[in-house]
Amino acid sequence: MKLIKNISMQGFSIPFGTRRGVRTIFLTPKQQIEVPDNWKSKIAENLVHRRMVKIVHVPDPAPVPAVKASSKKTRTRNPEESN
Image (cartoon, rainbow, N blue to C red):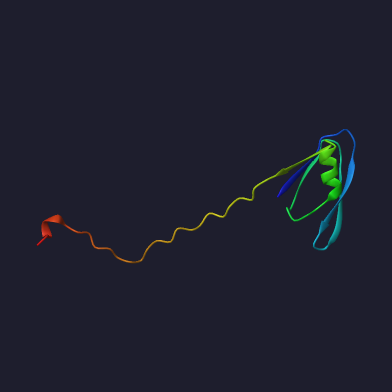
């Protein structure tokens, strides 16, 4: 995910290219939004270079793998039973 924050004192309409077409989002001053990584915008990149918008990549939370209990029975070894 990308966090896009308007750090200027003016509002911006930023078009993003998505799989379903173009989606335009209006950012008011000091507003921030979170968009998927695959949304691309040359206007947002230009505003970053002009220091009017900040883009921060937020890592997606990794799924926690479920620990499966082993159904195999193990035999404990008693040292006194050694041959």
